[in-house]
Length: 226
Image 1: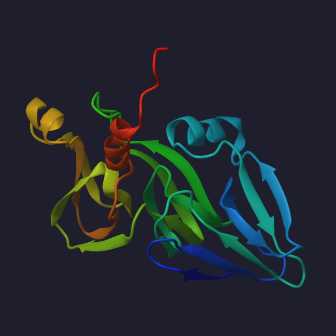
Image 2: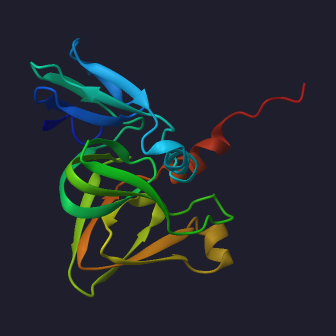
C-alpha cells in the first residue's frame, strides 16, 4: 500500500495505491473515487458489540467498508467530511488513541476498538472519546484544519483542548479535567482539556469543530412561530 496526500492542508485527499489483492478498511462515506475493478464489502467489524461501541461511544460509522484490489492492484481516493488535513502513520506493534471522527482508513492489520477515557461536560457536550488503534500497517487519520505534531520528552507535560486533539501514543500519561472554574467555562469559552505527559507523539488540529458550531449556530436565523 502506498498513500499520497494531495491538496494539503485545507482540502486534503488520500490517494491510495493498493497492491494486487490488497485490502483497506475505510469509514463509510469516505470514498471519493476508485478503480472500477475494486471490490467493496460493507460489514460490521469485530461483531455486533464492538460495532455498537464504535458507533455509540466512538462516534464512528456502525458499518465499515473494505475495498479490495484485483490481481492488477488498484487505486482509491479517500477524503474526510470536514475540510482539513489527512495524515498517515505506520504502526508496528504500537498503539494510538484517536479522537472520535479522525479515523479515516487503515490497513487490515490495524485493529480499531473504543476506549472511554473521559466524561462529557455539561457545557457544550465535549468529551474525550477515543478509538484505540493498534497492530501493524498504515493508519490514515484526518483533521479539521491542519495537523500540528508535537513530540514530548520523558516527563514533559502539555495541556491540550480536547476539541483540538487528534491522536496520541497510548503509552503517554493523560488526565482529563475542566479548565478554570464555572465562570471560565461559561464566559471564557473553554471546557475540557487533557494534560498529556511524555514520552510520546501528539497530533493536534488547528481548528475545533465544537468552536465552529458555537460560532455558527447563533447566526442561523430562527424559524418564526408563525
